[in-house]
Length: 88
Image 1 (tube, rainbow, N blue to C red):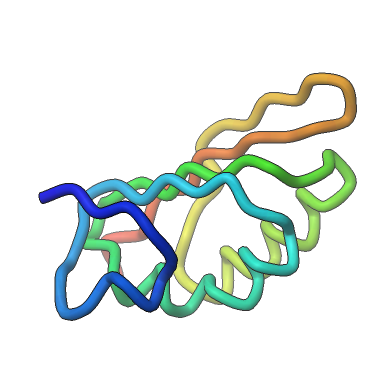
Image 2 (tube, rainbow, N blue to C red):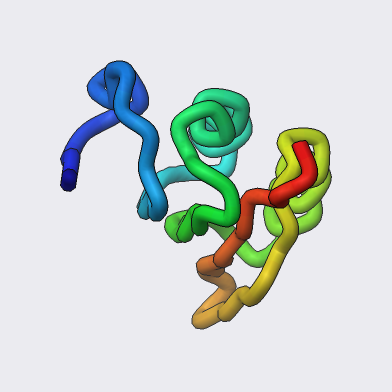
């Protein structure tokens, strides 16, 4: 199943992968919803934020049971891959 849209469109579905190109604030505001909609050990791939935002996102990710697996930067922009922890 593939869905395109915001968190409000997710309905009751649970996903294996969620991909988002959104700002840091939008990610932080929606991390708990993303966590509820992602099946462990699912991946959340995020981009559209600045490299300096990674610390804030990592802190929020940890509170929502995600582990940072990989990140990449280009011209101060950043993309990150988080994996939802199995032990929740």
